[in-house]
Image (cartoon, rainbow, N blue to C red; front, side, top):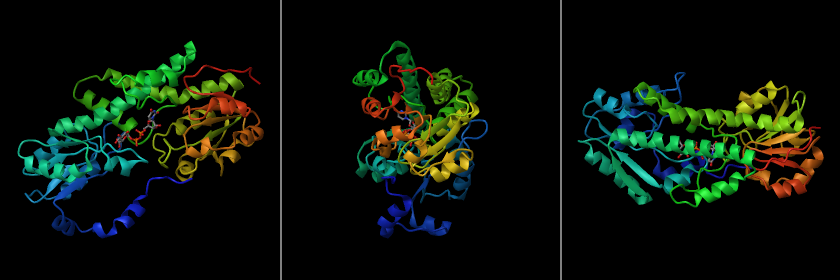
Length: 385
Ligand code: UGA
């Protein structure tokens, strides 16, 4: 199994003639007018965005009329204002990034929209950024700097809200015997709602949603506003990662000494990123209940091993399922759809699967001998063994 998007090394190789690398600031500044700041802004202990890397880069940059600083990093609204206050005369444009891990190149090449935020005096700089992006297509939206910064945070927070909303709908569906897949399809056909980001599951993870939802909540709080809704979005997401434990318990009774296989560990497929992955919380909760946890991920194994030292790492999905009392599909890797599930059922001590991403075909799984349970689907609880 490979990640389908070209890696950085491959991209560099493909475009070798068009890229010049240097570690010398003078050489960089002599050869470039538009200077993109693309460093990460991880969360601090307080939940605010850590801007130390942004500041370290910005301090290196010149304040002159030959260069434009373009902020790609996700920063709290107000950051641009504060940088411009500290560095009068600097040309500053906020141009937030909206690409997704795993499809970053395709997203970059086909943007839904390009947001160009600038304040009075920087019209030429904004025009230069627009000219750079225009060939890619997509609507170009000009705003002031603070609004551009807010668009980024609000977009991520809204997508996370959609996910927590559909996850709560899924939980209600289980109570009333409805199917969240059908519900999401029916909702999504309303153009005002839209069908994307309505896939129920075991919660969102990654380096962006958890961090940016909290950063927006903190930004609001620091400014004196209590962002009530985002508290719920975060709480629902935390609880959603844990619900699987209850589902397993409903089938197995006590999890003490039960062997549970996790299929997939990365926060989503086509990446090896383990940041805020739901698997981390799930594995810890299962171990807390006394279960023995074994896991397989086609790509994230190495990174996951560093974080999940007490979890046994298997070399294949079938090896992970060998002798297991239950399995949880955590990440919807394509290879799991192609697995020989009859063979898997034969190898397991009890062929019980909780599909945390509603990824597999329940009819096929049941035909292969599985007790199958998804998220937000009718409960099919058998008698505890
Ligand atoms: C996200 C945004 O989608 C990008 O627009 C943004 O640029 C990026 O964050 C960022 O700020 O850098 P990313 O974190 O790569 O991108 O991944 P997503 O595809 O958005 O998925 C995030 C999480 O939500 C994953 O754990 C995924 O499994 C989960 N998800 C997504 C759901 O649970 N349900 C859905 O319907 C969609």
